[in-house]
View (cartoon, one colour):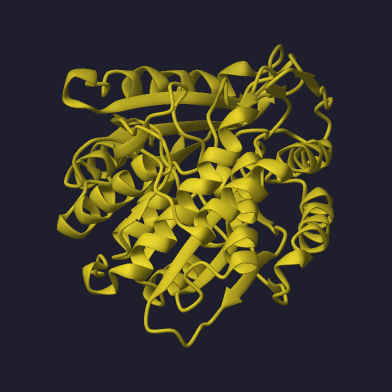
Length: 408
C-alpha cells in the first residue's frame, strides 16, 4: 500500500508530470554515442549530462581519471584514456551519506548506427536501459528530494563513471575512495526483465593470452616459422576444458586476433577470455590454471604470456547488505512495488563497492532487456516508480537514522 504524507504525495504528483519530458531527455542521451573506447563521445555525453542535471542546483565536478594499459590486436601494450568521472555532492559534511552510482558509457562502438524507436511505453535505443535509463531515475529522484525537501539532512553523492562496461579500469581507485566516504550505496543498473532486483552476483574477470611465434614466408621457408595462430588454437582448446558450469565456473573465449597476409606465417595471436566464478577462493585457482597453460604452450620458439585479472569480485550479501535489502524492499512496497530477488551471473560496479566494504543494492534503475544488443530497450513506465522508490527510501531512512546499514 502506498504510504501517504504531504511531501511524498507531492513528489508522486510531480514525478508523474515529469514522465514525458524525462523520456525526451533519455532519447537525447541515447542519440549521443558514449562507447567505452569513444573518448570524444564520452566527453560530449559528460557535457550533456552536466547541462541537463543543472536543475539539481549543485555544482558538477569533473574528475580526471588515469589511463590504463591493454594488449592490442598486434600484441602491443597500448594506453587508453577515457572521459571524466562526474560528481554532484549534497551535504558532504552530513553524518549519514548515501552514494548513488551508475555509468554513462555503453558497449556500442563509435561507428555503430544509432537506431531509436518508441512504441507506447517502450523505447528501443543504445544504452536506453544500460544505463542511461538509470541516470534518468537518479536524476528524477534527486530532483524530487531537492524540490520537496524530503530527507534534507541526509548527505548524498551522485557519481557517474565512463568505463564500467569494460571493468572500470580507470575509475576503480575513484570508486574505492567514494566507498570509504559513504554509509551505503545505490547503483542504478537496470532491474531484471521481470522487474526483479539482483541479490548476489558472480565474480567476473578478463584475461589476455599473448602468443608470440616467428614469422616466415608461407611458401619458401614455412618450416622456419612458428605459427602463433595454431599455437593460440591449442591454448583455446585447453581453456575450454576448464569450464565447470555445475560448480559455477565458466571460461568463455570471447575473441581471437592475429594474422595478416595469407602467404606469411603469423607471429602474433591474442586470445581474450572472460571468466565467471561463484566463490571468491576460485580466483586463485583460475590464475594458477591459466599460468599453467601459459607455461605449457611456451617453448619450441613460442612464448605465451598472461595478463588480466578479476575486475568484479564475487558479491555475496553480509549482514549489512541483508539489512539494506530488507529496508529497501519495505520502501518499495510503500511506493506500491513488490520486489523479488534473484542471483545473477552478470557483474557491475556494485560488486566492487561491496568488496570495498560498502553495502549496496545495484539494480535500482528501470526495467529493460536485450542489453548490449541492437534490440536493447527500456520499459518507460518503470522509470517514475523506480524514482519514487528512491524518494520513499530516503524518507524512510531519514525517519530511522539509528537503523542505517553500517560499513564493514
